[in-house]
Image (cartoon, rainbow over all chains, first blue to last red; front, side):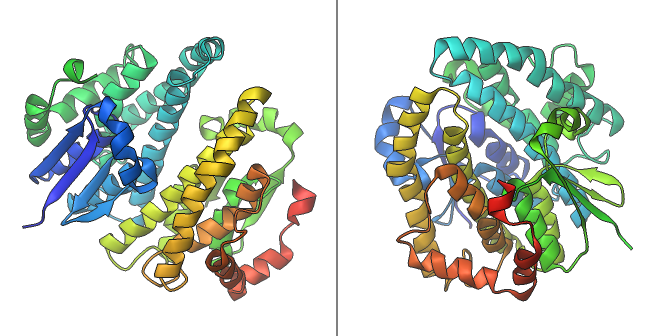
Length: 205
Length: 205
């Protein structure tokens, strides 16, 4: 039996899309979580000093999005042809652009610069991206791409808590289609079961 | 006949992997280039205010990496199975992590912070990534993945000028395997022909 071992901090963030996909596939995996104070010791042992990594039968893989795409193919959630796969890749990368913008604000070390960035983030960047995503989901029968469940949906919902945490706002507020979308993803039996058993977000951040 | 229209600034950077792939595929494309002073007018008309975009028969696509992957599939350069595709996706994303690190230094607005970031970039980040890439290419018979030409190779060489420009150093210096790798990619007939006819880098930056 193939052995899956995921290594990440003890919170959802970048590892959660992988955990969602492994759960969706009903694959048992070792969910190795470490605390922040352990990171300096672990960092030098990781490829390019970053996490998450997923080990599949001992083969070490980095890059969370690439790993999530790979698992999505196994799950039949990565498109039925190259064009549809492209649209899903675009949707995921658009969400990651938003994540990067939020993250560059949240982790800005200079408080004055951070305050300025935060104003732009809240007034411009988040509305720009989130209003587009709301419209996309409205126009695609409740999903990100082509009216069908894909890894673009699972990826977005999996990192949503992290986005909200970093942005210090609920980015779904006032966006009913995306709220329904999240609810629908959470109702997928394997995801529901994962969410019920994962370490709670409040506890882990 | 399918019409391809690429829109970007008048330099290689993020659009160049797309141009490499279209050239490799021997697809004629409209290479729409605009100057920096036109950007404020163009920006609001672009998806999420960003470029490059590629229009395929009028359908507007954003996200350069997703577009490059799609074209690579058409070219047979995106892996012969899901596992190989995963390794190529990881290789591309690792290069993009380096690009992001260089870019966050190059575009840092505070000069003092920029100087500090630059020291870390030159002494730590670039060696970390580039030494790994050098080793990867050495261990994979002169390519990034599995000893065969893939979009990971074309992507890296296509954005190399941009990386060097932003980093203000030749990141291939002292890395003979990667130097040979670049030479080999430049010798691919379609790439050679593209490089001969594209606007010169010196002129365009």
